[in-house]
Image (tube, rainbow, N blue to C red; front, side, top):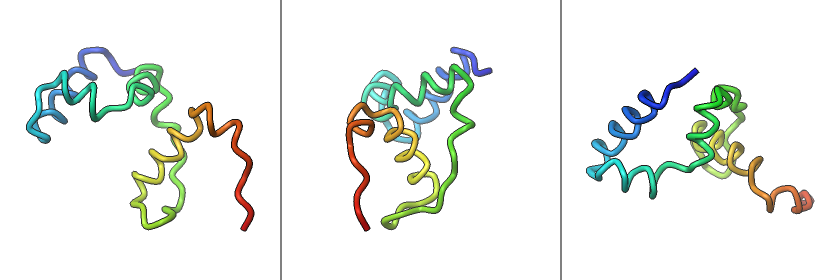
Length: 81
């Protein structure tokens, strides 16, 4: 299971690659649900799906991850094809 120290190091690495301080990176670029899921060991269970709408595989997985946790997604009705 991930540790707080590892999460801090990951945030520092992301911040360095973006050229921002870690606090800005964490607040503006890393969704809190991703950190929570990682700390709880659930991040690895994100289902990799075929990309839709021109998304890359990791982008599609993130969209699926966030959509599943969105209160709006539970109230939304499926789109008709």
